[in-house]
Image (cartoon, rainbow, N blue to C red; front, top):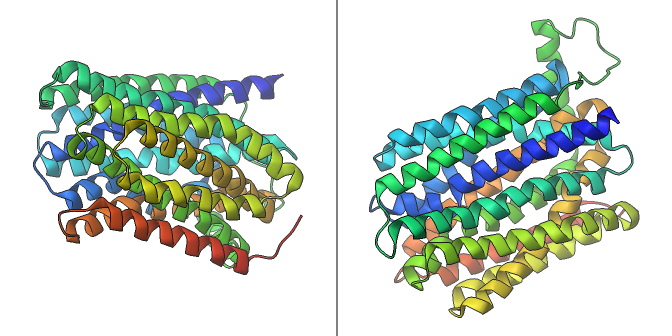
Length: 407
C-alpha cells in the first residue's frame, strides 16, 4: 500500500514538474526568443540550451543516485523546478534568456534519470508498463502546459504583438507549478532509500564514490546494446527538439495562425502519446521491444517530413497526432529495454547515460534545424525537416543491425 501511495504521489509531482517545464518551453520559449529580433539559428539555440545542461549532468546525476539515494537527488532536481523560474521575471534581453534557460536545464538533468530509476526499482517485471504509465501521467503535464502557454499569450496580446510583460506573467505561473511539484515530491518520496548493493563497504567515502562512478560509467559505456538502444531515443528526440523550436514559428509567423493554435497542435501530439504509451508498453513487455523501436521511428519520420508541406490546419492536426503515436511506440520500449540490459545496481547509471543521449538529440534538433533553415533559400523549413527525418531512418537501420534480436 505504501509503495502504491508513493507511486501515485510521484506521478502527481512529475505531472506538476512537467507542466511547469512545458509551459516554459512550447510554444512560449521560441516566441519569447523571437521577440528579441533574433534569427532562426539563435531561436534554435535558445530552445536547445537548457537541454545542453542535461548532456553534461544527467549521467553524473544517475550515478550519484545509485550511491547517495534517489530521494536526495530527486529533491535536488525539484528545487531547480521550483526556484529557477523566478529568474525569468528579470529577463529582458536574449542573452539573459540564454543564461536562465541553461540553469533551468538542471531541473530535468537531475530529476529525469533519477525518477526513472525510482520507477524501475519498484516496477518488478512490469518495467515497460510502469514506465509507460508514469511517463504518460507526466506527459499530460505537457498536454496542459503547451496549449495553456499559447492560450495565455493569445489572450493577453488580444490579436496584437506579445509584450515582455506577457512572457513574465507566464513564467510566474511556471514558478508556481514548480513550487507545487517540489512540495508534492517531498511528501511522496517518504520511504525511498538507497538501493541495496553488495559492495556497501565504505560506499560513503570519496574514494568509494569515485570508484563506483568510474566502474558504473565504464560498464554502461562499453555495452553496445545499451548505447544503440539509447541512441534510438536520442535520435527520435532530434525531431522532437526541432518541432518544439520551429513548429510554433511555422504555425504563427509563416502560416499566420494564433499562438493558441500552435500550442494546440503540440497538445494533440502529446495527447496521442499519452493515450498510446501504456498500451505500447504492455505490448513491449509481452512481445519484445525491438520491433516497436524499429518501426516506431518510421511512424515518427513520415509525418515529421510532411508537416512543413502542409498549410491546412486540420491536416497539421492529423500529422501531429501520427507523430505522437510514433513517439509513444519508440519511448515505451527504449527506457524499458535499457533497464532490461543492465544490472540492478547500475540502473541509475544506465538511465543517466540514456538521459544524456536523449538530451544530445533533444538539444541537437533545434540547433541543427535552425542552421539548416538559416542556410536554406528563403529560410525554407522543408529541407531541414527532410534531413532530420532521414537521420531517423538511418538510426533505425543502425539499430536493426547493431543489436541482436531477443524475445
